[in-house]
Length: 105
Image (tube, rainbow, N blue to C red; front, side, top):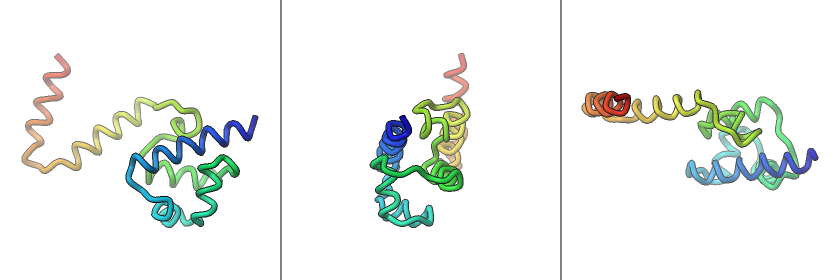
């Protein structure tokens, strides 16, 4: 059972890392763990500490719910929208606000 869970978590870590554009070396360095250990996590051979999980969620911009359970939370969606708006050039803020208001109708 534990092994199956590690496999599922590892697969979500790997696919999320790739979709966010991180190499295994880059993510391992940001997490302060070895590339080999990250490889073990992604292959489901090892679990990770809560601190590593917390840091991974911050770096990959996903919720712990997603990595552990495969389910996104509404807070994660809100965080992604907020981040997308923050990354916009300020001159596009009025357009973003107008678009959101149109979606609310």
